[in-house]
Image (cartoon, rainbow, N blue to C red):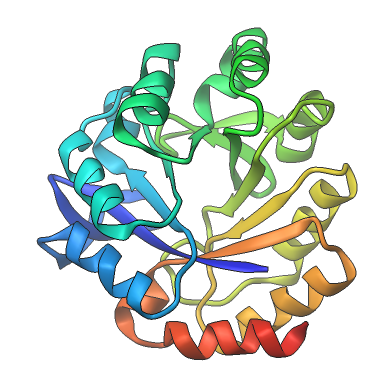
Length: 248
């Protein structure tokens, strides 16, 4: 199981939100590329980037900051936020150097378009499933649909997706740990044969250990994203990476 440090971008800075609420923002660094390098030096093998301005605007905004991160990091970077048309996908994959892009809103709203994009970019698109009470949220988490995350994932289980990134919004940025219900949701997705990345709520080494142990019995649980816990110091990345190694 990989551990992916998260870098959330807003106004060119590295920030974190609570439960995706733009009014509950903490700035953790003015230089995201420097932050990326820090995580690489501590052992990260992949980074998870989010363009928060892009998620709200519906198209990429923090493009230059993302370019600098990719150049500085020298490891694969995945990106979500505002990826809602083919032009944004091409920009990130072919020009900026992002390894794989995450599509959430449009996968729900334009399923045929999303299916075509996965076929055009096999193994380079992730399905972003942001859920509240297991139902999919879209538009930068501003709307909650009546479609369950599992129901949406089933539509795409036959495609060559890079991963499904499952976020429980209720847990994200709240430093309250990963609850059993969220883990069960992720295991149901993994049981469809989809590679799953856990996101939201990873707060302590115990959370990392729990997910690493689950991934041992369900190898389709391929990674976990860690955000606020790294920035507030409740998890040290080298220690977390050791926990994952020990669980193997």
